[in-house]
Amino acid sequence: MKGPHNFDELRALSGNWLSLDALPTWTEKGYDHRLSLFHERLDFSGAPLRELPRRLMVQCRQLYVLAQLTCRGMHDGRTLIARTWDSVVKRFYHPALPNKWAFSVDANGEVADSRCDAYTLAFLLFALAWIHRVEPNPEYIRHADEILRLLDGPLAAPGGGLIDAVPRPDGFMRQNPHMHLLEACLALHESTGRSNYLERALTLHGLFSSRMLWRAQKALPELHDNDWKPARPADSWYEPGHHFEWVWLLRRLSKTAGIDVDAEVKLLLSRALVEGIDAEGFAIERVGIAESTITGSRRSWGTCEYLKACAGEAEAAPKEAAIWRERAALALTALHNGFLSTARPGLWHDRVDAAGDALSNDVPASSLYHFVFAMMECERVFGCIVRQPSDLARKPALFLDRDGVINIDTGYPRKPADITFVEGVGEAIQRAKAYGYRVVVVSNQSAIARAYATEAEVMALHRWMADQLDVQGAPIDAWYHCPFHDNAENPAYLHPDHYDRKPNAGMILRAAQNLNIDLAHSRMIGDNPSDLEAARRAGVSGHLFTGGNLALFARNILAPT
Figure 1 (cartoon, helix red, strand yellow):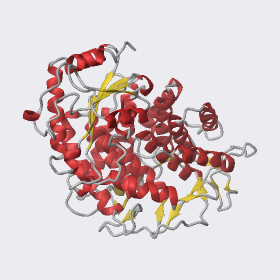
Figure 2 (cartoon, one colour; figure 1 turned 120 degrees about the vertical axis):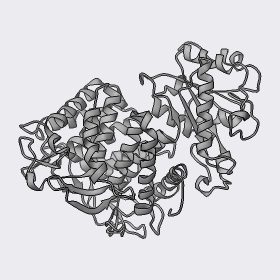
Figure 3 (cartoon, helix red, strand yellow; figure 1 turned 90 degrees about the vertical axis):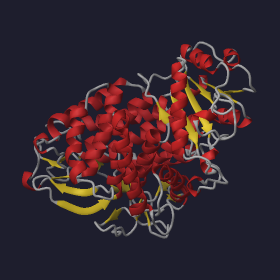
Figure 4 (cartoon, helix red, strand yellow; figure 1 turned 135 degrees about the vertical axis):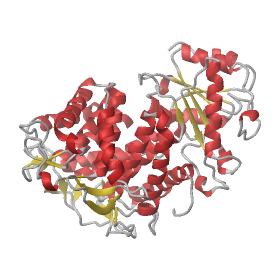
């Protein structure tokens, strides 16, 4: 993946690496069909290290990957999710154990380590939230609520928060399990709409804000004592990757709960951006708090979390989005060149030294969660145009193709002079909004793959079109485009059957995930049978527009919701 690529091309390469290389590798070579569980690690030939114990945390991270990519339309993981979850319950869940969930099983599927681990349970909650999004099931929520009772019982710390495990490994308190529990509670709230999960997330934020964050030093220590004071202050350290991970989480919490997190975000970034990122865009592994001593190695997850933070800040502060886009581009370049450039595609180096030389002996499955999360956030924020709604209440959408529906199809328009709006388009959008629909554009744009236009040019054109429709009182909520083609001139956009390219449903599913869209009551208007097929695959009612006045055509399709 080395070589000169602009940011848009790097995003395209990331998606192709994920769908064409990483996902097949980890659902085939990385899956133990005998146990119906994922392997812990592969070697650099792609062969599994079969004798290693299987941790519950890794199974949960891989379940998230399958669920996220299924919701995204990249992969239909429903069968593998169901199979893996059944095996997780069979092998890791033992009501006879004092705390029910085992930490790991051996290569034969028998319990290897029976300790109850808070970090692991946080990821179990996270996985349950995501597989519930794919297939709502009250059994998943029953398990989630039982796990929360464990966290409130034997894992509860006297001074607030959680001890690491039962039995307890040492006398330290750690921020990391709490960070991932907050992540899981937000995911559960988004998946179920239940307020108790959001209330728990807010309680965790309160603990972070009042007890964990060392404000005077502008740092989040990794280790605390039982009273939530920094343990060993003289040699305490922070991990820039965790600063960035909290930044993203705080922005997500703010977006969901409406709380102000600006001061905390600025504090976390004030050191991490200066000390925690090198000139190439890599997140440094560890920084001493007292003397800013640097541990020169870099881990893949830290750079992924930096990329997420860039996306979160670009979304939170649109006036500064260009700055964060530049930082994201540097981080994504580092991710590709430093970690993903392996002899066998779909694998990665998990750790490199300060010179960029690999320190990894094998490939841990646990890192895929970070790559997927970072790449999906990068695509969500930088790969489309979304006007954040004032609320994310569940609503249907009117999906519109672009060329031939919004504007006259003149063949690969790339500038405002090429655009003539279809008669009645403004009125049709106004009617849809009045009836309670979100309005979303989903458009194949193979002009990018064919090198007739760049992604930047297409997105600039969409911004201009959006402004023109705004003047008509016809605002569009989001613009999605697919730049890929199976016969691309630009190799960054070469894909044999891209999940976003209609008749595939990827763009519709991505919009549904981003904007909380009720697909069952949504409508699609397109001028091509592929539009209708994409709608069908997404569970949306499709309608073929053959020209004329769009408002008159839409009048018979839209109805009050």
